[in-house]
Image 1 (cartoon, rainbow, N blue to C red):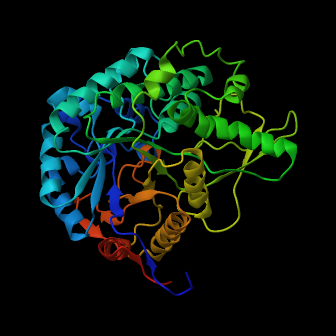
Image 2 (cartoon, rainbow, N blue to C red; image 1 turned 180 degrees about the horizontal axis):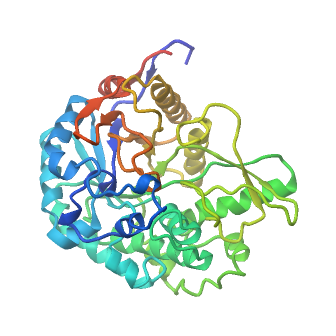
Length: 452
């Protein structure tokens, strides 16, 4: 493709946008408490003391939001279901939402879990306990029973790495625990939850999982830095892709973490349960790469926790690893802008799991609140160009979901970070499409990236 020429995506490519229940729905009184309600109530855990009690009030404004999606020409909408809401009031809200999406010609892509664990399950031990995986399967069966005749695209979990390691190792996400051993238990039980839930979903549906794999790069080609990258790759990526794609946990991960746990919580047959229903697609969430090196023995170095700062590392048994900020442009999150990381991940999974369709289930950037957002447009264009380059190289990428449709509650950052292509005035709840929304609408309708 020559410079200055439009970039044309293949026919049938799915253009979408994504949100998450706790980040936009609000209506906290109409659901059970989640771990994020409890976490946000602790002073200092969430910037500004913000909570998701109201958020973007999508629970009451969903009709307006679906009309907005249709006006933007979205082919698909990826949303998550609130487990605490289903337990409290059932699935009626989501049934109405799905019906409206279908009526508007928008393909619903349903995520069963985006981090809002019911608090009463955390009180019983949370994800480090095996029973939580079975409770998740029961919840999946309930949602499938209500929506299985209308929803054809399902993701079981969103970014289980964050749930396990930010929630139970570094403590910067709910429930705020800091036990490296528990984080490994949580990772396994999230894997198990995926397998058990997938078995409950309709036979004719396409079922995947949305991981946030890390494009891990060594700072140098030294043996020590290469080993640091291997260790982080095991904890960031292969702890999930091992059992999902290859039938078991990688031996080097087990060896690296042997001082923390003997992995006896992995029972005979668990790997078979995790991969029992083969993935119909793998969701890839991508924002920025990770550059790592080894630390000299006894030295202290920077740690990356994904969201926010913490005195605790989210990387069990990787205390000798330093994380480095690459030079160049950054988003408002401080994350470096590098679309080559997305290309590398897509190419990696195409080689690792030949023939498995891929979806970019999240990609986007936080910038300022302004309606004119050329930085976001440039970010999206460069990353979509990387997706197209992967497709041209033979990678089976079937769709792209921009994060996010609208400004929302950004977890431990509260309302201070804005990822939306639609601006939300939190005082009035007025939605106003940004310039990036109009740009993305033109791309989605035509399947063409305009020349730079």
